Length: 107
Image 1 (cartoon, one colour):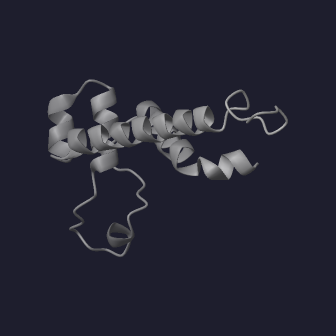
Image 2: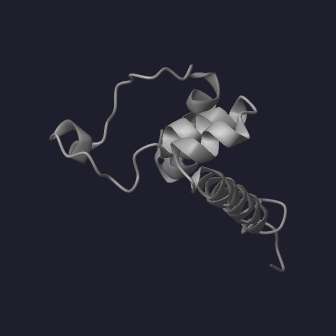
């Protein structure tokens, strides 16, 4: 359970991208956006999820129409996932029992 909380950000981003790869795009959709749900028409982030989902279904032009920064957001999220995984690997190598064992004499 402790490892899950340690890597919650990685789990969140991978799950979000997995969900966005499976979702079907419709014209009317549910949104978590508080500005949109409050009745405001403009939100700078609205359409990013739809844009990323359209990229996964190879509709790059429609993706750009949904939100011009969708591809950029996807690149940033993938970079963040890469950084989190590489940090996890470095952490595991640093704390590997074979590199540091307090029970071995001379270390």
